[in-house]
Image 1: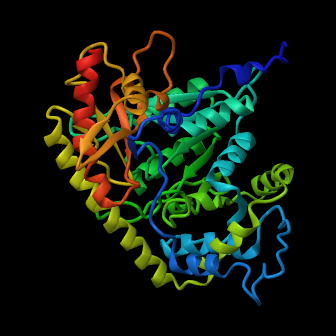
Image 2: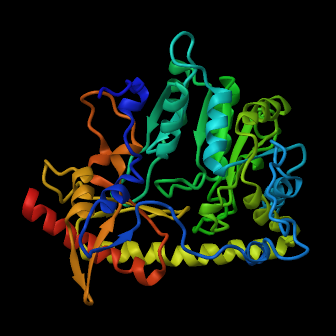
Length: 437
């Protein structure tokens, strides 16, 4: 029997680079266990105030004791909105005049922001401007919405750091492509690049000069490891960048700093009343964000600021130690490898360009690891799941993709498991090259 025809979009859609390894591994039928560092699925417990709320859900005298879970207002529960603003204030930024819209994860806030700032493909399109390597979901949501994208490439240097292109080059691309918005991730996913206050202000100035929105994805705010002060779009003053007020959006989430990936609670913050009204109107089609998730996350609205700052410091210490250890061990396990030296977030990029044969492709290597690779370690058969970086770059036909030799490592497993990653990656690479290279 013939099936109805899928849309062109559906026929062309492929799994995200951060999920493809997991999907392939699920099809595997042997006894190999996966060490999964392909996706930022944090394995730490939530903040104690959130855990307390979680454990009390449904208990007598609590909001859900009667078993009824109603919709909230589309804009979100006041307590959950207040929690996001309070967290921002604990980082040292003023929340006066900001509007908060609660969303199902930061992902939905991304989609709202793209829909509200960029024009549809065709006609007088205003694309979304990305700084490559860029988080894959921005491209995915733009495709879903029929919004075009354009990009400027950052380069991974031999010292493991990503460079930001000169501001005049960014200005040139902006004038040429006329984007509706620029996305910047100050604590960058996937690269670990930290955008300090000066860099953010320079990008904000370009947005003002060219009448663009500035979208700042601050999912990893407070995860920075160089001793710098926290950086945020909300730290840009109108004196430093005249005209910045009323054109800022930040993407917020419970997933990373608060270790609540599966809670699926995020927010869109903006200093534009018109943008806020538009996003609330758009989100009425979703009805509201997760009611239970809002209740659990809302516990942070009552946590004192000094306790929130202590939590930030605890998270930084945990990830910073693992990131530094990994860089050293990976270089030892596979000499000649370029290992990301991140200043922020919880990711590192591994680049095999200086040791891999010309035909090497990380996407094929990731498929090998997920589908057939295995290493015996302490009586267990293990494999490694990573994210191939080609999907984080936007390359035209025939253009070489730097991600062809790169993969992203997410520091989401307990330290004892993360210590296995350098040796696993090195041995699996040797196995792969013995078969395919």
